[in-house]
Length: 59
Image (tube, rainbow, N blue to C red; front, side, top):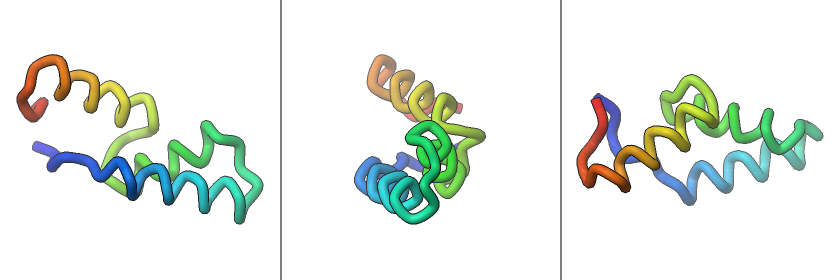
């Protein structure tokens, strides 16, 4: 089970990564998601959407 992701930390990490490494937004968001234990940004956003819809922590 994953803990609730920190959205502010995700956004900040992605912005820093994008600025400092000149990565694309998608690449930077993948890095930020991986820092929180997700496979990539799609996995991160899918997990959050599932959490919001079901009001429970996804397994």
